[in-house]
View 1: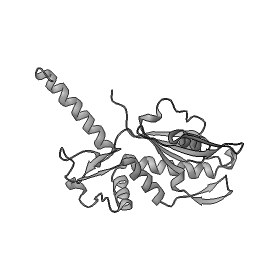
View 2: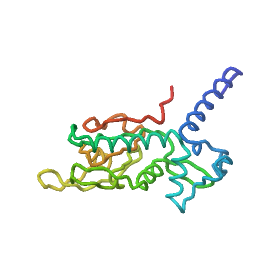
View 3: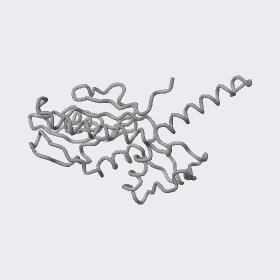
View 4: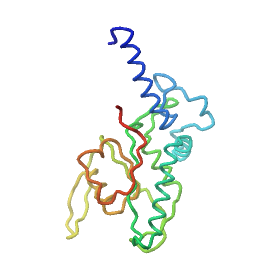
Length: 212
């Protein structure tokens, strides 16, 4: 608890800084009330609707300039690499780092910022030259993945010798990213330690700077 006026001012500054960081990432992350039931009056023409994920994703990303810029840069980088014959058309992995928004309240509903960004990217029907198949293809949901701290569950996969093995979902996505199959990775602080993405990582877009 704050004990004196100086402590109160310091506490307010910390809260203000946190809210400012959230607003810079996306205005949807800045609650208009404690319960998150109200919508931002400035965003009334760009609602988030649980029953229309594509529309919600479009509004969320396109009204969040920092996120939109990172998405456009990631897609442009993929297209550039795919057309770069000197580099054997090897596509470098794109990592978008965001450590908030996994379950934010807006307009009385709860949304996941990672899922909204992924949905927006997939909905672009982005085309690029795939060096695995030597043909043009459209970026799919399997090529855009998410790693957060709350991930659980296992996935059965086949190794180089044809043996079936079971690994954690986080480790599976890591391996797919390092193999070049996952082109864009959306990650929280869970990707900061204990997970090696260096084999394929090309560009890191830091949307959310850690508190300091």
